Length: 66
Length: 380
Image 1: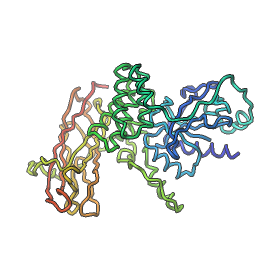
Image 2: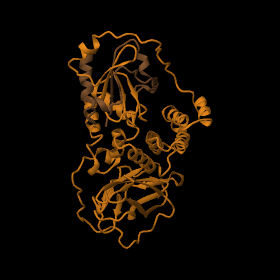
Image 3: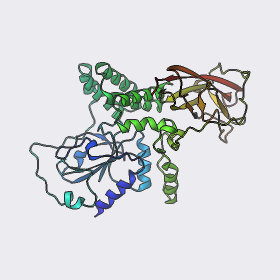
Image 4: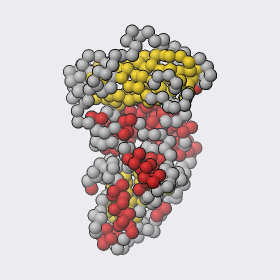
């Protein structure tokens, strides 16, 4: 339930700079692995990757603050 | 819940997250390494890193994803999370392909800090010289130029170069909305889909009301980044005579104030508008200061016949201190005539300001002439 609440919050967050994404236009395909990119963490600038969350289900939100 | 933010200025995203009290982990993708063309995108990813749903329905998420069991794929180990080895990437690039130059440049921008932006720019330029048809490289090259523009290693034309590379990338891939928004962020109001950072003042107020200190922004959003969209160009009403019609004010030949210009977009079709960005920086080598006890900085634009301007006369209010050394930014918009011929058009402008040589030095009233070169494309 907590996860669903966060999901709703995230959806609100992105409504500012929303460019409506249609499922076919995202470039991501069900069944494929998510790319193992290492990027800076917003919190402290240290390297972070989705690999950190292996073993857990993740709801990933790709968004913008503009 | 994990996020990836498409944002050139991570501190702005940090302010946004503070405002909305969202504490989940966020990865910053300022170069658009993910290659997404739109936002938002939501993915449901299983325990093994496999995408199980794209933009799933919120209502059925629990049943369709959270309560599901997924098979463990064979031979998929989690990648190690570590900083890239820049020396190794450089060695690979030196012997290699456009792709290896691009990878090296990406790593320099993301992990190298502002001192290595010159190298990053050179590496991207090497990549495009080897592979000129790869549009993301041009976008990232634009990001690197804009980063350098906002750093202490700035070159005067860095912002304009950023706009030119973003424009080139978008021309090659017009469906890339992340890139389109990057240009619109700084562009004219006729081309804006919405104000980009108008939420910043509200965010700060609400954070302060909670007795918290808002995250500081390294670069404050400028006029274009707050401006609302317009459906029609609003032409300036003549409000006053031009301030130095006869050109009698002495020119700033000493170079007390250094001016930078950027046009967004860099080229317009007939009937289109553009936003002019001007930055005036006191020359620190000459210890130049603004004299704030005199009149405000004034800018006058004098476009040729047929061109419209939203504000022919712009002034920048002085701060309350007697002297200061801040950069003063001026923005205004121009509209190209519907029947303009292709080619280069010169837009004369000039700034008038009071400047002092050092804190207790001589103060002078000076004029600086600036010619804006606007490229007019063929008819749409």
